Image (cartoon, rainbow, N blue to C red; front, side):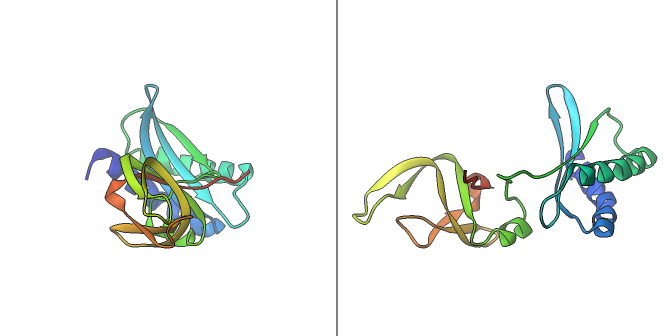
Length: 165
C-alpha cells in the first residue's frame, strides 16, 4: 500500500463515524499534491445535497481528530467538499447509485465505436450514454446507436455524471 493509499484509508476510518452520526455519505477521500501543496480532501453528500454548513461541521470535527492522530508528517490542507454535479464515478457504490443516469465516459486513447445502423464506426475519445450495468471489468451504457454498449473499465480514464443545463 502506498503512502497516499494509507493516508486515504486512515482518513476514511476517521470519517466514517462522523458520516454515520450525521447521516451523510462519504463519496471519496483523496490525498493529492496540487500547485506545490498537499491536500487531504473528503467529498461528502446526503439526500437533497450537502450544504456549506454540513461541510463546515464535518471539517471541524475531522480537523480536531486529525490534529490528535497526527499521522501525516507533511504539511497539508484539509478540505471537505461536495462531489459536485458532474461527480466522478469511482467505486461500485457510485456506479450502483447511478444506474439509469447519463454518464460521460472518457477513454485513455481514441476508440472506434458504432455510429449508425449501417455499421459505420467513428473514432472518439469520449462517449455519452445511459449507464445500464457494471462489473469489476466492464460498464454497459445505452447510446443512440447501441442499446447495450459494453466498455472495458481498463480502457476508461474517467466516468462522470453528465451535467444537463
